[in-house]
Image 1 (tube, rainbow, N blue to C red):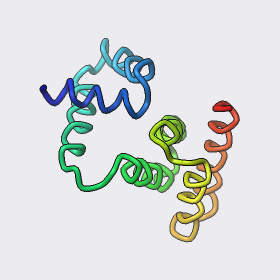
Image 2 (image 1 turned 120 degrees about the horizontal axis):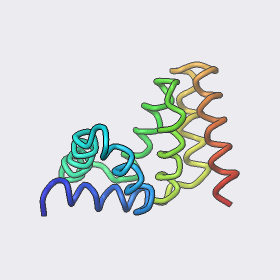
Image 3 (image 1 turned 180 degrees about the vertical axis):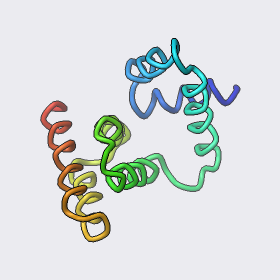
Length: 122
């Protein structure tokens, strides 16, 4: 299986087939190469098989919270974290842990996105 196809399967597992296809579709007419790069990256990091998908999502949540201006991606990855088995408590704890490193504004922004996702995932 090539990098693209394997990456697509991994992304579908993490965020769901419908959302994965929506991302591909949203890039198809303007920058399909970005989708190809994203899917190849999913494949490449998974082949390393050093850390789990849960650990990868925790790192992704941390990185997105640190940047502070990534609410759309943060929302997507909070949902992905739930999809692969992180609990709501674990997700919140990621941001609690980040507080002394990234500050209150970025942490509160991440918590606001988290609250929105949790409210819509019932």
